[in-house]
Image (cartoon, rainbow, N blue to C red; front, side):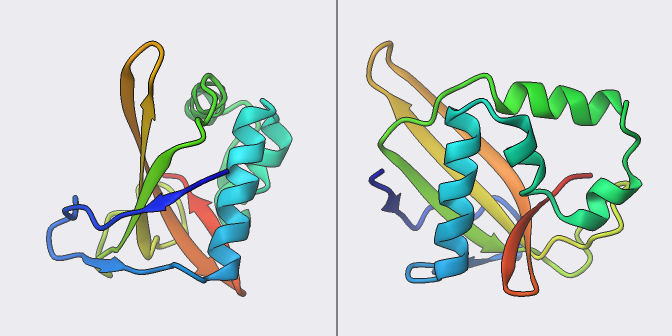
Length: 135
């Protein structure tokens, strides 16, 4: 799937744009993320969430289940842009024990019907792997 890496204005005050072109771990993460969404595979999507975030969530957590359901509603088109910014070290974590280090902004353009949408997700690279950090 083609991906257009772009430098867009940061959405977090004081954050730095990070160039992840050539980062194999990030490319693998994004490919897995796209596959999970397009295949409507909740188990594959859960595997992208940091284990410490999963460990503290209740299996019947309505917020997590809502996120999971909504994440799988759409199909990732062939053309999109990603922008990753470094988060401040004091970025709020909510109820998650993991401090996110980066924010992913993922912009999509659907031609028919003409619809633009954006996904914002918090990330961390831990043990050489990228993970989603959910509050």
